[in-house]
Length: 151
Ligand SMILES: C[S@@+](CC[C@H](N)C(=O)[O-])C[C@H]1O[C@@H](n2cnc3c(N)ncnc32)[C@H](O)[C@@H]1O
Image (cartoon, rainbow, N blue to C red; front, side):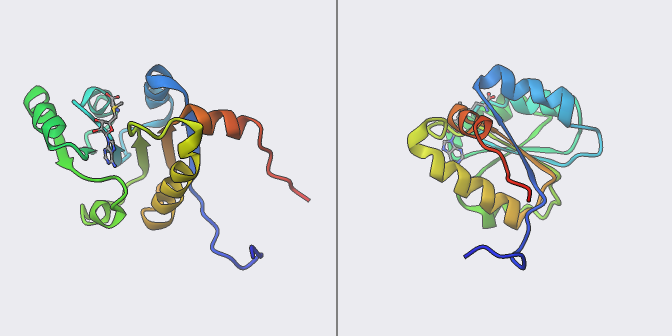
């Protein structure tokens, strides 16, 4: 059961609906000092936008074909094949990521809400970034109806 001694996560989660909102956060959140990990980069469109704010960005995707194409389209950027659920592989990049961007196909709906929360918690616990931005309409909707009770 939760108690006052349990490990407290410092990471802030930002839930967005749709790719326009997801990308709009970049100008507000990412600064030149940031080290950014992107999960689900597809062909690197968002990676390129992130790279306009900081030169320390790694775009990753589970699809080797997406990564091949991303490298072809953006040869100046770093892309790696990574299954987002393999957080230890993300750790092996050896970087202290300050921001994590997550846009995985299939995690936006209500059915995958628990998987999404588990993924966020895993990255917050292991990589301990300041902020994780996730594209998940269902999480945004859920979070909008949540309040943390402060006694
Ligand atoms: C909607 S696309 C991402 C679009 C990209 N964020 C952008 O802004 O252009 C979703 C991507 O998630 C990737 N994906 C799905 N499951 C994944 C997983 N477990 N780990 C990493 N990438 C995954 C897919 O291969 C796909 O390229």
